[in-house]
Image (tube, rainbow, N blue to C red; front, top):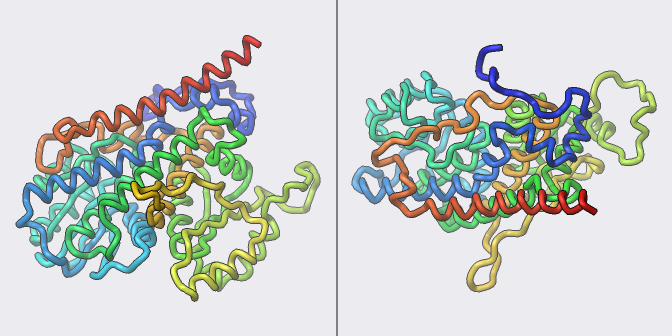
Length: 431
């Protein structure tokens, strides 16, 4: 066998049931040769490194930053989902138009800001977008690999991810870059700056520890969610704006990581589609249902997953209430760690952190589900765009910033959690 998966081998027997693998720590870790679980766990580190990279660039070239861009364009294959997640997480509308597209439209010029998200080191479409934006004089940021056509087109406007991770699980890094850029060009509403991102990074770390494979499966929120999706077709329903963005993110990551064809239903569509709600409600998981009893349905059952990031106003809350009542048996995301507490003892305004935490939980669940189903890993695993680093204003050299120790401490926490679980299992075997 040749190709990107030629060296990929499963370490668990072919006759093992996916549900058994999902609750077997050794099987999960053994089935993760590209270290996807660790990659998802770097969400907090991705945020911190990205914020530091952008701050470093702004300090080097403060005169190049527009006081307020006329518009911000986000270009890339995942741009629409990333932008929806970012805007829903900041809890307010950007003060200038912010749009997502797959290419640079003809109206973009020197008064605009363009963020290009490359999907791979040889993403020709991203390279063309970067070249077009720079030729037209737009303030440009290009997130891509250090070598290849994207790097050549981006020139000094290239940002290479400091924390390596496959792009399918690098939403945290892209979201942090997008929010940092919105703040830099005067497009972000108040409260969406670095302090909120720092709190979100801490909350992402807490979710990662809760979802660690060393955590018992019955209290691991990601395994609990993955278990509920086994053998079903997930329909992710957003109850509000943030929930709708999370549904789009979850459907994409389930497809890319687990190979599961999930459907995302945004709140406005759910509200106008009673037939969809009736079907998903009637086929929602019943804890007391007999799995061997014939019910006359062919194919996999539909599993509704209800997502919410907190409705912003009375109208949104009314919509969320209607959708929630229509899906009484829908799967809900397990309870997540609380928002971090500040030095004064008060909890941070956790909207951004809460939305990001749910996105990270969905990423973990997709990875666990993919491992249980023995899905092939992403083609850009394990390093994604961060496999090579360059020297330059956007290189984000962690060593220069003194950030290596922060990431090393996080790696130690992740490894310690795994070692503790292994020690506990060894103790049980001896007894």
